[in-house]
Each structure stands twice: as C-alpha cells, then as structure tokens.
Amino acid sequence: KAEVALNTAKESGSEYLIFSRELETSGEILEILKQIKDDLKNNRITVFFQPKVDLKTGYIKGAEALMRCSVPPAQAIPVMTRYGLLFDIGNLILSSSLRTLKNLLEEGYNISMAVNISISQLLDPRFLPKLKYEIEKAEIPPEKLILEVTESEATINLKQVFETIKELVNYGVKISIDDFGTGYSSLSRLKLIKAHELKIDTSFVRNLPESDEDKKIVKFILEISELLNMTSVAEGIEKREQLEFLKREGCSLGQGFLFSPAVPEEEFRKLLKKRFEV
Ligand code: C2E
Ligand code: MG
Ligand code: MG
Ligand code: MG
Image 1 (tube, rainbow, N blue to C red):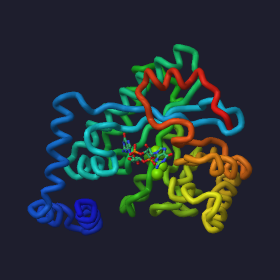
Image 2 (image 1 turned 45 degrees about the vertical axis):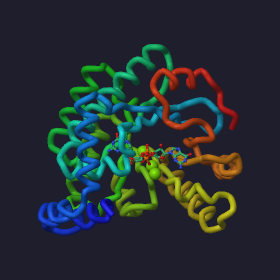
Image 3 (image 1 turned 60 degrees about the vertical axis):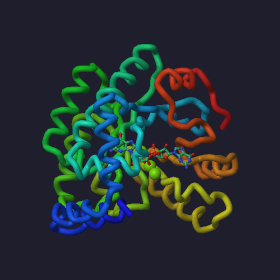
C-alpha cells in the first residue's frame, strides 16, 4: 500500500532512495501525484470549514480549515510532503483561511480560525516569516489564529520543533495539539510545548459511551487539559450519546457530523447564525 511505502520511506534514514524504489512499483503514488498537480493547475485545491461548537452554549467558537482537493487529505498530504509541494499548498490554505477569518471578523463574528500544520511545514525556515507576513497583511490579531499540529511522525529534530512553537506562542498565535494520544505525543512533550488546546482524536470518541476503556482515556485526556489549563476539543462527534458523555465530563468544545461536516465559506457563514442543540 502506498501509505505503508511512505511510512517506510519516512522512518528509514535514506528516505529518498527507498521512496524512489517504492515509486517504481507503486503506480498509486504517481496517480495521486498526477491528480494533485492537475488540481493545482486548475485551481481545484480549496478550503472547507468545520465548526468548533461550544458545548456549554451551542454557539460556534471557531472554524477548522480543512483542505479539499480531488484526493482525500489523508492520502494527499503524505504525497505532497514527499514531493515538496506541501509548503506552497500549505501557504495557499493559510492565506485563504486568513482571508475568510478576516471577512468573518469584519462581519462581527468573534471567532478563531484553526489551520492544520504538519511538522514538515513547521520546520521549514520560510514558515515563520511567511506566517507573520500573512497575519500582518490581513491585519488579524495573531491570537485569532490557531495552528493545529499533529505529532504523527517521530520527529527527529524535536528541539527545533519546540523552538519554532515557542516563537509562534511568543508572537501570539495559539497552538493546538491535534489527535492527542495517537501519534508520538507524550506527557513530557506536552508540558514543554505551551499549547492552548488539546484535541481528542476521533478514535477515542467513536465508541463512546459504550467502551469503558475509551471512557477512561477520554476522562484522562480531559483531566490533563484541565490541569494544564488547556481548552479541550472532541473530534468526530456523530451521536447524541457521545455528546452527552463529553459534556458531562466537562469537554469545552466539540466537532463532528452531529453538528456539521466541513462546508464552504458561504455555508459556514450561515451556520454562524445558528445555535446548536447541546
Ligand atoms: P484532523 O485535523 O484531525 O481533522 C479531522 C478529520 O475528521 C477531518 O478529515 C474531518 O473532515 C473529519 N471529521 C470531522 N467530523 C467527523 C465526524 O463526525 N466523523 C468522522 N468520521 N470524521 C469527521 P479530513 O478533512 O479528511 O482530514 C484528515 C486529516 O488531514 C486532518 O485530520 C489533518 O491532519 C489533515 N489535513 C486536512 N487539511 C489539512 C491542511 O490544510 N494541512 C495539513 N497539513 N493537514 C491537513
Ligand atoms: Mg485538525
Ligand atoms: Mg484531529
Ligand atoms: Mg483526527
């Protein structure tokens, strides 16, 4: 499978060698690459927005920007990363999301915008200057931008990750730890990163409230976020019973198909007028 090949390439020291050898046998990766390049050429890479709902009030607190192209992000992003396309595409997503945020703030909606950033984007020396430039150009208060960082890779240059995050926090943008509990994130790393938000991965929400194990895990994550003064966000809420459990345990925000999937800006604007039943 393409994804396995990508991970193998990532984890090995000589990633280019192994990746290119896999390529010869993996038409799937090339097909994905071709589609991405096609999308780029035809301006078909866009951004949709999913609401982050306040579980106390039912109002939308913010949006999460999710990339949309002809390939699902989970497949597109590893290929973009490997072929050096993610930096530029990431910038497209970022500036487009900031434009939407700017519009919504000007219309009087007091919301934040969350953009997903992978570690490879974060570690690019061009990232921080570009981000500052975009924020200043759009004249947006930095604290309205949340960067959702996923630690899905056993990052080699941890020190550089921490330093970049520290600079970002000092600059004023907020950091959210995405998919907490799944990748390589650990409590010691969490303590070092002064993040503002902790996101409970879909995989822990899916079997609530039936699974005793997942109930314990979710309670534990909520305790950690409270201890560290972080906002907690549950992803993948599809059922009322999941919502009830999360509310009871004090989870601050929720996302999921129960409220809304990611939608285009115009549709998101309509959702902002709405109060969800929580
Ligand atoms: P994520 O940041 O954890 O985003 C949550 C994913 O769950 C999204 O998938 C979203 O559409 C999906 N989701 C939302 N509500 C529900 C629900 O109720 N049930 C289920 N089953 N799924 C739900 P999507 O859009 O396919 O994105 C997948 C991942 O790709 C994201 O996970 C994120 O890590 C990455 N990604 C997406 N857009 C970008 C981007 O612009 N840049 C980067 N670097 N990564 C991105
Ligand atoms: Mg995310
Ligand atoms: Mg997530
Ligand atoms: Mg997730």
